[in-house]
Length: 446
Ligand SMILES: [Zn+2]
Image (cartoon, rainbow, N blue to C red; front, side):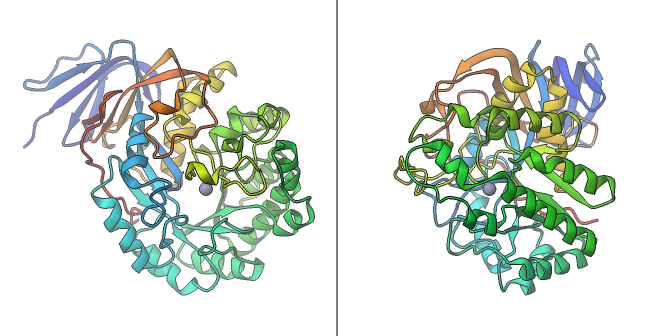
């Protein structure tokens, strides 16, 4: 019988019931109890007292492009999971594209797992991919433990991961619904993108005009219709257009099984502030105007938007040319998501409980990880320790990302991550990172 090995104490512990002074006891990597702050320490247990720094559940980021193997010069499991740990994230789920091979069959999933195993500083799970012609691979991937399947309705940016047309989408979703899987969708309508003026040159306004809101709105409307017809579970990735929120809210009220995420860049950066040629701000769908951002925050406040996840999608510097037409589309923010969101959230009157709901509890629920997402008995002892009142100025040199390109350079943010804990072990103390102890996660079986 093992004994309580660790007691984590703080005057501000964020639990599902609210924030309070508490002592959290840990045994064999699991939370045993959340006790009063002054509870007696069991004999032999080590105490870590964080004073007034806040103890949060480790964040769960279900939208990360690790790109490993194959494009490890863009990012890799070693660098991505170190950056995540430095940012208070203890679980990530890797997107099925931008690595070579993409995660579109079980042989490729095996390759990905083999590569990730020795490099994971945090827990890592995998999404599968739905592409033209791989319907037969979906069930085997599901049985092999992927958390769901990603597809694109418009070009993905890489040739080996083609988009699906409406017929292929229906075939994939029908198959996925048959085993009660989850389809996660990059929802931009290719017809509207084709009809829009082409992106070109250094002006952000020209890029923004090439990815109109209607493209997202109509793609989501179509997805809702299909999910309703097939009684299937769907999730809208990286929502940028707030105009789609009423559609999503109405569909959900009507029983359609749809969830939605948005990202730190849509909530903290605006089209108006992007300098000419600053393609570190380029992503698809795009960062939109300040008014749209206000409406996204409203969607979070009223519960229409479930999660905030990074969509960390890095590349090498040379691919970030100063032309918005040709530059790689993707924003790196794995290490900065928590302070970026906390800085904006506090200004809008939200508490850390809200941030934890959006960035830990809801993403954990999306992928069915019942052991993650809360400080509660029985959960994994995954934590972030945050000094929420402290500020820092983003210096790209401080990032653990492989490529230190960031749209947040020079911004002053609230919230310093003091340390990050995975299964009761400190994996990051703000300056140094421990050797990798992350595990590869599979979708929990019912
Ligand atoms: Zn993405």
